[in-house]
Length: 104
Image (cartoon, rainbow, N blue to C red):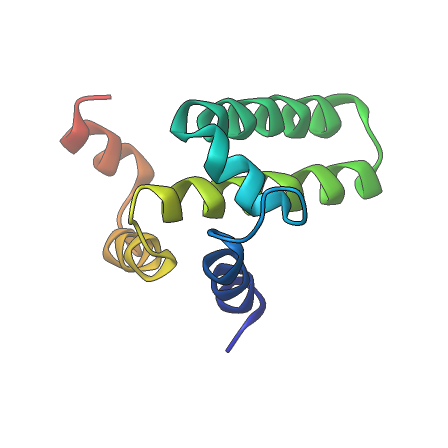
């Protein structure tokens, strides 16, 4: 089991814990809109760190972003394996071709 799989399992285990003792449970208690807001906040902080921060700040914000994304995915019933399968599907495709298929 790799780091992301362990983190996903930890998030699952804490999802229904006491919100007073678990940040994951607290996020879940606040609902999907709050979880989505946190992903947006962490994405913004990651961008800022990439543009103006140190490598350490970028690493920290990147970790926060991945954590909050995993919380959000789990709340929606989407597994890390599903996301990884999509990345596997895209492997070897031109990013421009992939965007054209989606109409981006």
